[in-house]
Image (cartoon, rainbow, N blue to C red; front, side, top):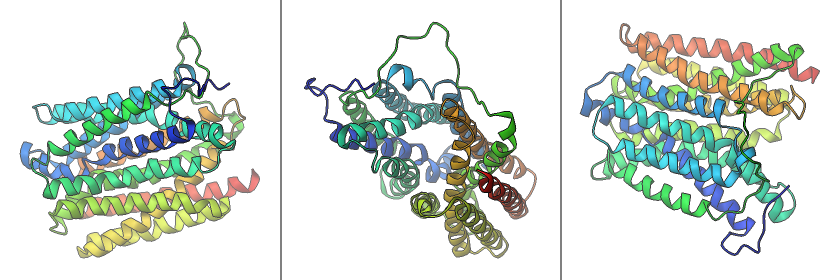
Amino acid sequence: MSTISLEQRRLLAPGTAFWVVAASFLLMMAFATVPTPLYALYQLRDGFQTFTVTLIFAAYAVGVIVALSFGGHISDWVGRRRMLVIAALIEALSSIIFLLPGAVPTLLVARFVSGLAVGLLTAAATAGLSELRIHHSGHVGIAATVATVANLGGLALGPLIGGIFAEWAPWPLVTPHVVFLAGLIVAAILLMRIPETVATVPLRTSYRRQRVAVPRERRSAFLLAGAAAFAAFAITGFFGSVSPAFLAQVGNVHDHLAVGATAFAVFGAAAVAQLISGRLSPHRQIVAGATTVLLGMTMFAASALTASIALFIVGGVIAGFGVGFLFRSALMTGASLGDAAHRGEVLAGVFLMAYAGMTIPPLLIGLALLWFPMIPVLLVFAIATVVLSTAAAAGLARVVRTL
């Protein structure tokens, strides 16, 4: 039941609140990827290796997993508004930690805290946008599209903004965090004025963490969806952490804006694929995802062998489209595997496996780079990603025919 009351004059109208939530969602997701082109500057300042970059990046994904597991569902109890404000303030805390003195430990904590904020944000913002849209116009309408653009679009904009700061702003390791800190504080203040869209309940005496519950007869389909999500997010994990090192070592590219623009193009392609995939049947989405990942990662491997930056960028963009198609297919399959009472728990499992993909492969790449050259490590990554995504897609294609 809605608790919206327009008689409370301090609250924004649902239509205005909808865009406040969307803009805040975009801002917080962008902050999550701003550090991508800054890692080279941190390496230069603190003298650490590529493995440490992947470790710092993984701290973010671990934070997301922790928040999804223990707090992603709490907005159903305490309300969307309160959870969104908390997420904005936690993200602001992350920006403050980035400004503190210290090297790797500070960066690890800052990225982990940022991941916590995103894990709390995603479910509350997505649900809140749908509910605000219903109260504004009587139907969901564009809420799902706006949520997708804010989520993946924010992740795409972050590296581009970070690259601009890194290339032209004074104090590039300070200025972006100060600017985002100001924006996040403004977002938190505005979010305090959005109307609540769920009836809050008293705090439960016995807390229950988010479960991952899948009917026994559907577990193989769930594992296929999880494998597809794992493979898709492994690609985004690479471009969010290791790609700056690749561009520098293999392509001799040290322009921070170019690094940010590359990550922007890959994440942006994934966002576009999410938007256009609704026009395709589930089977065609899966085929499109597997095909574009295969083509993109093949070009990626060729770029490693030929030191071609053009091939690297084009291959990354094509693979980005595959990420968008595959992840949407994984979510659609997951949503079909449980009834209404358990659908959220199944989807939680898909998200957790996706973020495991964002965490584990980049860490393994960074660890391998301590002993092996860049090119053979990346070739193994490309082959492994193609094999996993193709196998998962083939299985999902069989699954969707039976649903």
